[in-house]
Length: 596
Image 1: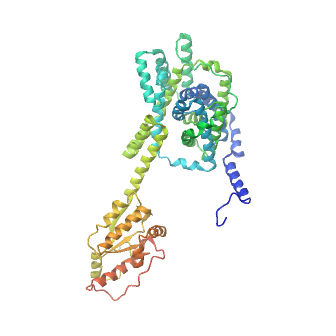
Image 2: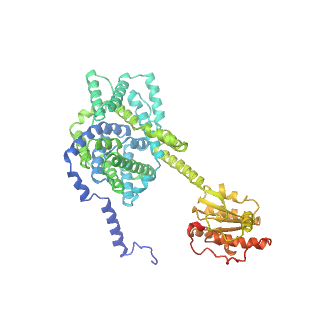
Image 3: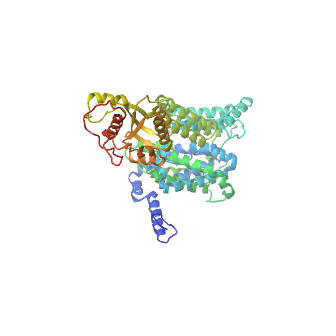
């Protein structure tokens, strides 16, 4: 092959490609410095890990049940994904496992493809996350607008709450894909066949968590409330639904769930799960950085760790996992110093899986519903929502639309809607920043060496317009077509030194405005255009006629002199000193901004 392209089929290119791939892999793997941090404060890490495990246990059970894959899937995810993401991830303080946001995405997959489909999607998303990490894609997750993030967080909280209505009411409801429909059906069934015991359990657990968190934030009220609800159920002999039988231990790793025929249909869902896992994990890692003093996460390494966790967890019956903001916050506030704390959390949950499965099996589903309802309520940051609502109607609209789309449709649709609306509003703001301003002929230029009478005559017949900001598709028509309505003058000088960008649409609209002025017999001159903008204008032939007549200038003084000479030719009455202007100079050199 010729040129600078690389032929990866050539033997000489393969070693270079292998070295590049090896370098990227080494960049996302934990190094000695990272692993050495696990020995700096083991006592703090052990205590923090135990505390997080206590908080994570009911959440893992609840999210496993809510996803449709079962409580054992939630525990397997917390153990396997929690350990792998902690060891290979890019944050020393991140805690990973099943989350409410992921549950929202997984529920429709369970309805369509069953548990096997959920496990397949988790495995596929792991591959996508690893590929994203190796490609260095971690940095792009920072470009999601805050109203979109807050909007889908609010929507997720709403969906989680609605998902728990059937279990909290002890009601039967058909498995509709829309959670609002399912919740309404459950309420209807509850009215006809009330189950006050289950409602009391759910309400009591939720109230204990919410009130307790305000009074004693450091106490794990979620676990205490679940234990109390389980004890009350057993002692009172209440007839309520429980988790039921749990296998003691994790199943042997297997790919028996994988059905290759379903992989093409699940590709879109896997992409959505991978995107959500990346976004939520990096948000959680960023929150951990903000809560700590000196910790800074590595985005690509974090994506690699989450990808590996999601790749392996399905082999043990686990669902897709992400970094968990609530558990990470507990970890940091409990004094965690390294990733050892998250590893301890996974180890403690593994002990529960192997040694306490019979006890866990007796937990009422209504109690877990109460845990998740309280979690959903605590996900809503009222102060953040108020701040965004006050910042402008555009941000408020993005937030409301994203949240509404999350509840009515699904998370992928919600994020796409939010991003599209945010992009449209951003383009609108950028377009509004562009302006066409009529400026004094010699604004920003040295005093001209002309008589006062000539200066007045020049100002009467020659006008200068300065274009500020972007000239692009979203706003060019708004102000450039106004240029064509300029009052009767002899010449118009377009000063382009403050144009920030020009796209094809903006260039064509500018050309149309110039053509309309020329058809009215007005002389048009262009000055101060940047070289990269000139390339765009020349590629579309916008300045061809002006260049042929030498009317494109590097600076405004040359344009004024040219217009002055042409004005003297058309208006013989003009009198001036005998200082003939130099021949017009094409735009071949760069001048300072003040002379453009």
